[in-house]
Image (cartoon, rainbow, N blue to C red):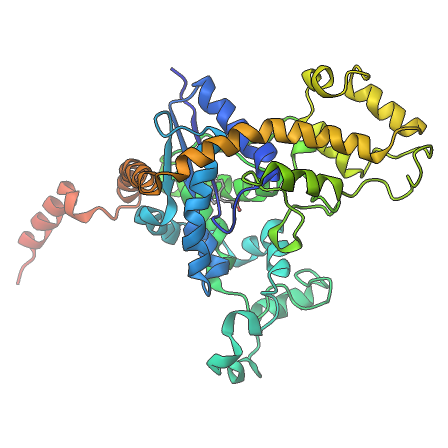
Length: 409
Ligand code: TRP
């Protein structure tokens, strides 16, 4: 049997969208159904979501069920894999605490994902985390932040585009250290393979470093994970419908998995294409044209026979667009049909699962129980390796008993 352990998760901050789908969910279902693994875990990363939503627990609480329903509706199957909720596994926080000893502040500051996320969330500005109404503002004045000082001496490293220090005084420790917590998520299950998007690469690299350091200090205990990226480059990071680099709820440029067919069509019709392709006969551009990027991610050969028989392949369609004479409406209608064909069974399954919400929670609870057993067993290994298993360490107790007996009083 395969010795692979697959693990991945998502933050419950909103419903999942088609970017999640092509970037990870679709691949997960394929992996699940190929059954070439020892174990597979998919989890809802609520504790991680709280690192930047600590002031809005209601959002996290409401989105656990949304993500669980999205999982079930894409075809993740709790009879084959373990689906769980991160915060229900206290061993993960325990592990993260010990890993903190193995990571330097400077190393965390170099994590590019953390850096860009801090800027996106406005954590570099002092008033975000502290909250003006809490009256902690006076603390900020005159305090020299050694981290900032060091950055300043290194030129503009650690500063954002607006030249605000990225690691400014508004950055919560919890958010800053979430890569360490993510390393705990992965290693607690001895995961070998993490299917994830490209943005997670720095997290996996950091996890590998922690594993190596742990094993070299405490002895071979943890397993080094590998990231598994989607093979189709259009799927690595699906742009938003407005052509912006990332689909994100705050930009309002997402197509959600649970969206109705009408809504999908409407969003597709409003998609960003080639601003220079004004009349049908103008030659059009494919690069940066969101409709073609989505076609690269979703279109299969069979779709031409079904919805656009006058073309034999995506290459032929692209060539016509580049030559001129092919209108945006036609390619958008084609894309809308493809998306809806893919999303229809997902929507149907969601409707079924929505009928029994308590059962979805039961499923999560069962999964969390099983996950906890696995994490607890790793935690036992870790305690043994780190020599913090005093009560079970019969040798330690016997040796000390002997030594104290021989002491002259
Ligand atoms: N950081 C991931 C995201 O934002 C979620 C996540 C948390 C994760 N822990 C993980 C992904 C462990 C893979 C493995 O989507």
